[in-house]
Image (cartoon, rainbow, N blue to C red; front, top):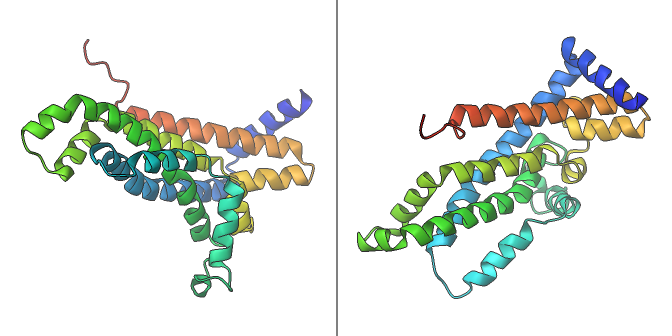
Length: 234
């Protein structure tokens, strides 16, 4: 209990004084996470809609594989990305290992299947409702996808926020490919792990509280700005 109170006091102290390291680490966490989720959404949302409106031979197998990829072990993803980006790997020439870019790549691989799978489930339900109408007016596949994406935007926002929540708390993969380098690749989750290793539990708890608060505030801000909770009638 004392550790929890000390952690809360540490978090309040860091926020009130706008600790320079905390601000830097928090901004880097947001930069990596938001970039990864944005790119993952550009890939995952259209793919989920395409999968809903398209019929092909191995469609069920593709859906099952996509759902399975939602549980990708982050440390395995980190290991694969590490090998690919290392000096002996095929992309070692770009010198991306132990940079924020490597962390973004790892998070994209982790988050994309989550966003794609959740968006497919939402688009599939909408497709059942719109199927006859969209077929009867002879829409193209792109027009069908665009209609589903627009009408299902609230469900897709939930899918995107789920991906954001998964990415903001990620540590295994980004620790491997980022290296937790001070002033370069250190983010909130890796900073927490470092402080725990040092036995500085109050500071670790304080950083954890800041991480949770930041995730909640961003989710609330997105919901308010998008008016997803706005009542249809007064």
